[in-house]
View 1: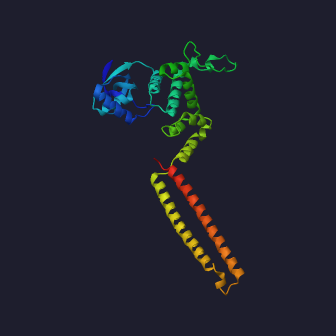
View 2: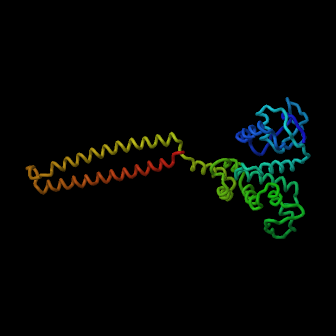
View 3: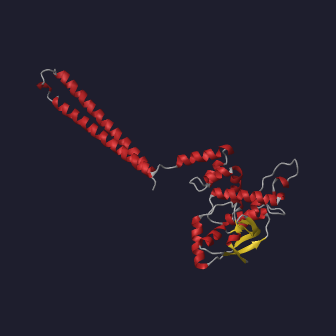
Amino acid sequence: MNTIPIEQIGFEMRLRKISQAQVERLAGSIADVGILHPITVYRRQIISDGRPIDGYGLVAGAHRVEACKRLGLAEIPAHVVELSDLERQIAECDENLCGPALTQSEKALFIRRRKDAYEALHPETRREATLKQGTELPSRQVGETGKIDRFTTDTAAKTGQSERAVQRAAERGAKISDKALVAVRGTKLDKGAYLDKLKTVPEPDQVAKVKADLASSRPPAKSETVEAVTRTAKRESTLRQRFADAISLVENTCVIFADVTEIPILSREDATDAAARLRRSQQKLKEMERRIRKDFESRAAALGRARPG
């Protein structure tokens, strides 16, 4: 193990973005107990002040490097290894796949990148390479091995995942485009069940599908929800008052016609018929009020459920 200058470490083109929350936690731990696990690097040239100098490329430990920078440290413990480009890609994928914080879309991305690098490094592990020309392609079973472990077996052993879990992630990574996986990453859609549905969508349509599903699942903003409830409540209050006034008018009119014998300009039959019509109108108005109240309560309840916590 060596201690190397942090300023001589280059780690551009990383497959995963830095999590500032994870850097914050690591910085606190390093400040208390120091670095328990050295980073892994390889020798390479980096650009410093516009000119190439001897430095290091990062294989594993990007968050540890960022945490040390935040603490103002100039050097960091490191294992210096000799790896080919493909071996470095595999090592980087393994480090991330061993971590607990990956989402399902990130697992699919890293598994696919690891598979591409592994099969380029060991082309004999590709399915097609193991078959004689003209024979039918057999299905592979979990646990199968050859002289070189096939990709899923090697990945499961290196990352601690089950081989079946590796196969599921590899299939998602193979059938879902990079852009669609990036669009899903970190959203409420970033679940295995959703990715299994997305992989059945033609690749050119996947990003549009993700955007549409995100838009349909997004709740209204809190301010918009409150304003909508307030406006609806005001409209309901106005309607209640109008119907109350109308019902009062009908009731008062019915009282006038209660003693129809005292109105000489109307016959008893005409007065009785007019009173009956007014009473029917009163019932209709009350029924309309009940329907409006029920509709309002239903809409208010729906808006209440949509309000973000």
